[in-house]
Image: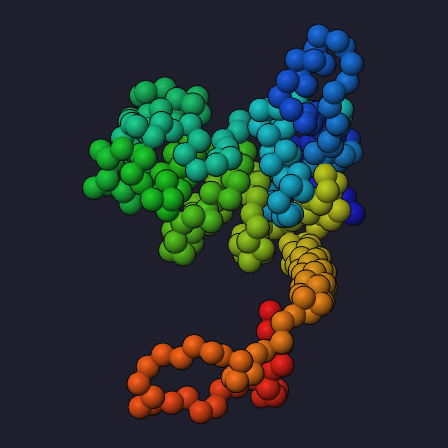
Length: 308
C-alpha cells in the first residue's frame, strides 16, 4: 500500500532502487577492476520504492535492522545516489543520521556548535545569534567547554538535536538520535518538532521505537527487505509491524528449541550412568559427619539416572 500526500510534496521518491556490490575479500575489488570480470554479489538495499511527503508532515519510518531504512536516508540526504529511479527534494534539509555527526570528539561542546552549524550551512554570525538558544534548549551550559568525547549519549543527543533544529529547517531528518535522550528531553524535542512543522516544515523520523512513532507522527512508512510494504496511519502500520516481529520471535524460539533438542538427543546417546556409592574407593574426612543420602531430581521431582 503506497500513499501519496495531498499536501504540496517537498520529498518525492519515484521507483527508487539501490544496488550494492558485496565482495568476499577486499582483493576481489582489485581483481574485478583489472580483469573486468565480476567478483561480487549484487545486493539490493532498496527495490522500486515510491512515495511522496508533503509540506508540514511528520512521517515515521519503521523496519528491522537491514530492512533498508538507512539506505533510504542516505539517498534522501544525498550521501548516496540511487541505482535507478529518481528522488526530488524541494526544500532546505537538516539531518541527524547518527549521534555526533558533524561534530569532532576532541573539540568542546562550544566549538562543536560552530562546527555543526557550519556543516548545516550557517555562517559564524548566524551561529552566534542562535548560540544562547541552542545551549538553553540542550540544557548543557556547565558542560559546553568540555570535550565532546566526554559527553554521555544523552548529552550528545541533546546537542545534536539542538543544533540541527535551530536553523529553522524546511525538512528535518532524524535517525534514532532521540532514542538516547531521557523522557523529559524527548518530550521537549517533540514539542520543538511540532513547532517546526506548524511553520510548514517537514520531519522524517526513523526509529525502532513504535511507541515514539505513534506518539509523534501523522503517518508511517514500513520498509522490509528493501521494499515499501505499508504506508498509512501510524497505529495501523506499527501494529502490523509489531505482529511480524512477534511471529519472527516465535519462529526463532522454535528453531532454538529444535536445536536444543537435537543437542539433548546427541548428548543422551553419550550419557554416563551415575556410579553407585559402593564403587567409590577413596574417602576423606574423619567420619564425624556423614552424607547418608543424595539425589539429583528432575523438574517433576523424580530421581535422575543419567547426567550429561
